[in-house]
Picture 1: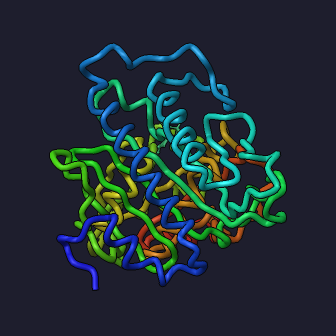
Picture 2: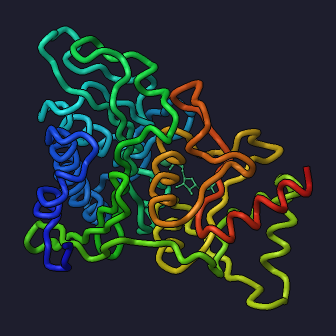
Length: 335
Ligand code: AHM
Ligand code: MG
């Protein structure tokens, strides 16, 4: 039984037997993410003190400015996973292509690939707003001992074996699932350990918060406009509250605790929205479903979408079940 004094390390050991495949590899993987997250957390927290913030001058594959901390977080997560020799491949939102690990070594028995958004919402760093790391884990589909291939990464979200995020907020939390519910651990910075602070997290079935960048309103599809108007109507428990941080992990985390919906729809400017299926939407959708919530692209379950490329974008609606279903209803009606 889980208890609130339990550390993440103890929790992983205790729950290892309930993982689908019990070689201990997945436990070691979560362990290295927890370690890298501690290092990144330290760096994020001192961003205001040292001159580390600001664009690094590079642009990532989506043509956006990279902040220095993005690069730092990307390097830390990749290095930790490579050094600990736990995975056979990594794909990162900050890298153009996937990385094959130990691809020359036939004895290399690692079965898992990790997809990661090392520092999501990084445009918020220089204004001291919470950012996060998002990760997603799959079993490779090509034979163990051979170099990983693109198809190991282009799997549907319903094949994920684990997913989670780290939120670097007023406190730092690691929230993850291995398909047996969602648990949240808070870092005690004095000791350097994560404690189970939020066991069995659940989205309330209904919520009163909607999170969307309303600046894009005129570019949204009619169904989204109609749903937003519905949220604002004076009726029953409406109008709902509008809350948008612009940091997916933070908006999701709040909505999971309080009840709400997050939307990044397509628009006349971005035909597939902004968020990436593999690095952002799939892991958050897996977490949402494990927490009794729901995630879709407006019509289709996110976890059933067949990925066609690493950096693919999809519209994203995610949160409390009844709210997401209501949004779907409006989308369908307006079609
Ligand atoms: P990023 O991966 O470049 O950080 O972008 C993802 C972020 C999400 O965290 C956030 O919800 C969204 O972009 C905000 O976008 P916008 O400023 O267009 O509303
Ligand atoms: Mg991102």
